[in-house]
Length: 208
Image 1 (cartoon, one colour):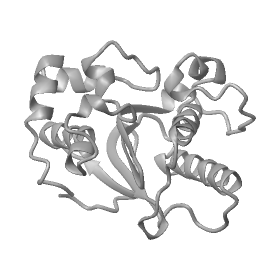
Image 2 (cartoon, helix red, strand yellow; image 1 turned 90 degrees about the vertical axis):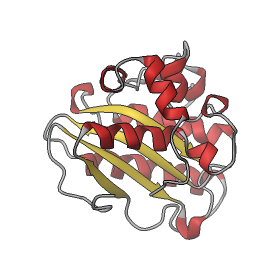
Image 3 (cartoon, helix red, strand yellow; image 1 turned 180 degrees about the horizontal axis):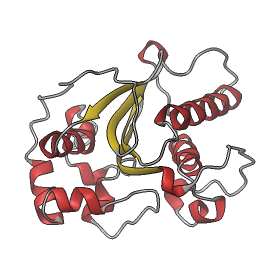
Image 4 (cartoon, one colour; image 1 turned 180 degrees about the vertical axis):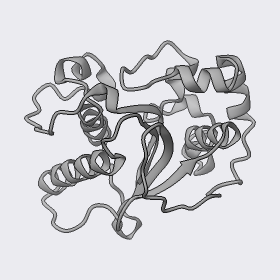
């Protein structure tokens, strides 16, 4: 793979962003935690609470979260997968606002949530997040397949559609989370059917 800690973010570039829990510990303990992360991610992407609360998978109706307002035009999220002790995002920086600022706000807010909820102190995430620049279509297809097949790779599920906390079902089913921009991957794979087929044929042993 390419440089796994690529931090010179630029507009109109796509990056694979990932990070895991401190000491490889869990960062998601129950369903509400996954929703809390997605809700914060949505806010960081510029969506408002009303838009996010329409979706059961990311609804936090009694939330008092305050995250600096971001324009929807700043970023595009193409894929995600939230695993018990780490997360993956496939995201494009569209404007000059750096992905670093988005991830910093997201992880800081979520860490405060976890520490308060579970009465713990200290770091939630291990060191700084990792970033890989996507340089061509084949790498884009490989990375999205890797992200969507993560639960199969780690033997959490036998099929990616069995897992709620990834964007796979936004591509292959009627689920339509507002935070996902689907057009690019569908066009790159030349259709939803081909996306599904190539994702399922991905060699899960060929990891990072």
